[in-house]
Structure formats: C-alpha cells, structure tokens
Amino acid sequence: MSRGNFGSKLGIILATAGSAVGLGNVWRFPYMTGQNGGAAFLLVYIGCILLLGIPGMLSEFIVGRHGQSNAAKAYDKLSGGRPWKLVGYLGILTATIILGFYAVIAGWCFEYLFASLAGHTLGDADYIQNYFVEFSSNMWRPLMWGCVFIGVTHMVIIRGVQKGIESVSKWLMPILMILLLILVGASCSLPNAIEGVRFLLMPDFSKVDSHVVLEALGQAFFSLSLGTAVLCTYASYFTRETNLLKSASQIAVLDTLIAILSGLMIFPAAFSVGISPDSGPSLIFITLPNVFQQAFGSMPVLAYVISIMFYALMVFAALTSTISMHEIGTAFFTEEMNLPRKKAAWIVTGFASILCIFCAWSVGAFDSIKIMGISLMDFCDKLTANFMLPLGALLTCLFVGWFVPKQTVFAEFTNDGSRNVIFYNIFLVTVRYICPIGIALIFLHQLGVI
Image 1 (cartoon, rainbow, N blue to C red):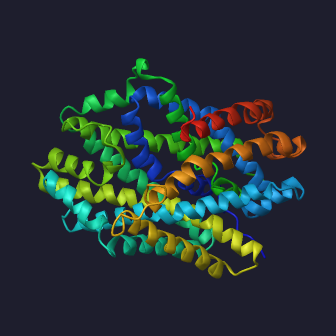
Image 2: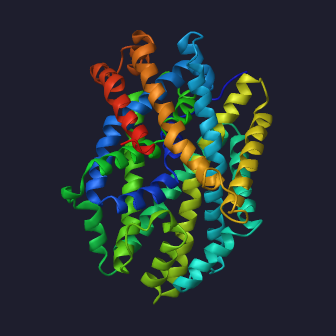
Image 3: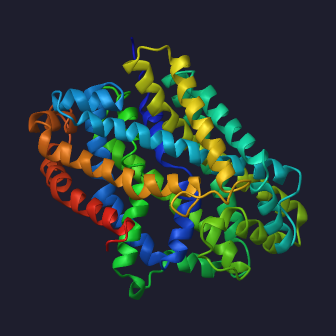
C-alpha cells in the first residue's frame, strides 16, 4: 500500500509545528509561566527546548524517517525484531488516549466560540463562573461538542497526508498566527499592560529553584509532543532530502514563539485589570472572559470581537494537535491491518469518541464517580502526562542513543554525510546522556519522588 508524503518544505514545517502547537502553548504555557515566576521560567524553558526538546525531536525523526511506516513498525524495523516495537505501541496508545480527553477541552473551546458569537461569554464574574459550571455539568452539550471536534478532525484525516494534513496546516497555522498577533496588540495596548510585559520578559532569577527547572523541563516536553509518536509518524512522511536538524530547529523556534506570544496576549491584559497571572487551568474559560469584560468593557463591540477571536484561536490551536494525534492511530491501522484509510480513521474516531463521552461525563454530569479519587478525565491526563509520555520519550532516546546502529543514526542525521556532520557527535552525546537524565528527572518529579 503506497504511503503519502508531505509535498513541500513549508508543508513539513507547518504540519509538524502544528502537531506541537496546541493548547499546551496558548493555554498551559501561560498559566505555568504565571505559577513559576514569569520571565525566569521562560528562560529556563528555552534552555530546556535546546537541551531536551530538539535532540528528543531528532530522535523521533530518525526513527520515523528511517522506518517509513507507522510508529510500531518503524521501531520494529530498527530493532531487528527485538521488543522495541512496544515503544511504538506505547506512543500510539498514548496519543489515542490524549485525543479522547483532549477533545473534551477542545469541545469546550468550540462551545465558547459559538457562545462568544451569541454574546454569552461577556458579563459579570458570577455570570461567567455560572455559565461554565452549567455548561460543563450538562448531560449532553460537552460530549456533543467534543464528538463534533473529533468529527472535524476525522474529515481532515481521511483526505490523506498532502490533501488533508498538509493542506489544512497551511491554512490553520497562518490564521492562528494572525489571530495571535492581533490579540497581542490589543492586550499590550491596555493601560498598565507594561507590567505584564515585564513579568514575562524581565527575569527575577531569585525565583528559580529546582521546582521551576523541573516544571520548565516538563512544559518543554509537553509542548513539543515528545513521547506520543506524533513526531515519529510525521517524520515517516518526510522525503530523503529533508534536513532533520534544520526542520527540528525551525519547529522548536516556531513553537516557542507562539508560546511567548501567548504570554504577551494574556499577561498584559491580566495585569491591566489586576488579575493574578497564576490562575491555573480555569484561565481560558473563567478568568479570561472576566479579563475581556473588565479590560474592554467600555467598548462593548471591541470586547465582543476580542472574545470571538480568542476562542477561534483556541479552536484552531486545538485542531492542529488533534489532527496529529488522530493520524498516529490511523497510520497504524492502515498499515498493520491493511485497511483502507477511511476505515482505519473510523476505528480511531470511534474509540476517541467513546473515551471523550465518558471523560466529559466524568467532570460533569457524573462527577461523583472517581478513579483513584479523581475523574476519568484527570486520570487519563495524569496517566499520559506523568507516566506514558516521559516513558516513551526516555525509551526513544535510549533506543536511538545506544541500540540503533551508529551508522544508521549518522546516515539519517546527516543525510548520508551531506549535512550537519559537525553537529552529529554533539547530538549523540546529548541523546545518550543529557536527554535520558533530563527526562528521568521529569519522570521522578511528575511521580512526586523529587
């Protein structure tokens, strides 16, 4: 069965960057930065991207492009039949679970986009709080929007790599960037916005401790989708001419830029109205509508437009991620079971939709039912973020650094000796020693050991 490939260098960058850019950048990064000291956290985060992110991405790229297949088969080809194929299975399972509960939050963004169009996200603080509580606890609305979001993702996936993933990414990523820049401009024009800019860009190194460093490591890891087999699967669609180091660097720069712009969108507005920058996960559904109302309340039309643009941004950011997570499972079922792409996509859509329904109910209509004291949605989040993601990334770095033949790693990294030869030994030392230690520290921190 013939496989698709990305058709252009721009398509490679935008599609793969889109797989990394998502709610982790425009939602999780700002509140993590707010909770960990602002600019100091940002600088540590950038350092982690360089030390951990780019080498980790390159490791998955090497496995994926050499394997030219779904993640499980790619690891199997490079391991010569040894059990490293299980790392591919782990990544596929991780991504599919994430797709299921991620769709719940993406569905909330969809709901808020349409609610913004109807003017329902503007009001006093009590109204905004009650709106979210009533919506999230409704029996049907959250799961309906979550499944609709998976359905939109499904429609992109069945069109294939070039006509679906690459084509949509070429539209979504520029639109996302334009919306983000407009919102940054609006936020930074508010009175006292400079305090928010200082918070993000002027570091206070007294706030840096081991906790901040580990949180920054975890955010870099989360933001770039390391350990989900996303990068491995997308790299299987790269051409032999693709410069892996250059692509990884460009993707990391774009991903970090969007995270910084998200901070510039949120912190100036929050400081302008006197709202704490560490509002946590409730930021986009409770805190920010209140910010919009207070900051632009004297100009109702502008507040209305800003609200719509913000939730459109959230929807686009979520969609770039759900597309990549869906593709991992679709590629697996297409190649391992020799299924037509549409049938393979329906398997992933069906599983993700069922999980989405139960996750939505677990934080809403049936929130009294717990797994180990937490909701199913929180359980899936913690299972993947605290265990499955770091384990997958750790095993990939060990696999590429110690078990894949050095001549294979050299050939993939340097495009058969034609590029980046000078950086090869640096990469090999990093992926053998620095990345495993860094990821192991994240792992232990997430598990509460350190």
